[in-house]
Image (tube, rainbow, N blue to C red; front, side):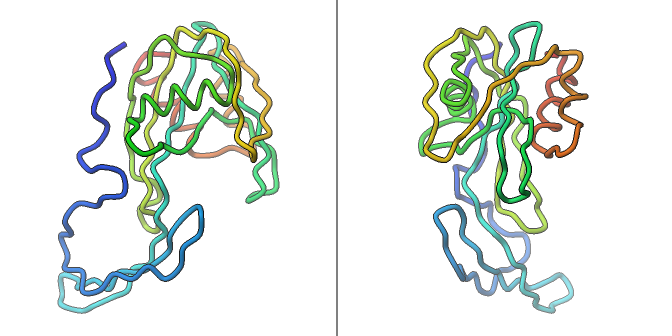
Length: 191
């Protein structure tokens, strides 16, 4: 495992300088979970167009391995009205790196404290609409500890043999974060 590495060129909530001129940027509504708005952008041909966006806090997804199994959580997702088997995940809090947030979320959601974490990849998600970054973290050396679920978390912890993890993740309903996390860990030779 490598040490906790810097996660991004841009701190949480910050965007790089635009390549196309932004003539106007408006946050049209805010909720406790995201901000929605639009940018009026000058395109390369000189015309202007509104591009709509939703900004969400950075998130982390954790691929946790016991060496023989991968740890999942089963969680009902009201947005799709279904229960999913997925990797532990959560919001990166102010001042946290992805690896620190990943270790915290793993402890809180599953009751496993990792001996080590490493950042597999940072990505922008659904870039046609979202301003949302996600970090994929691999965790190993798991020791049982006390869970600390949030008031809206009703999770069941389960684990599956490493060789079955991708098949379990592909069983509908599935999500992009779980599939991407497993594929990244597998590609890096960690699973």
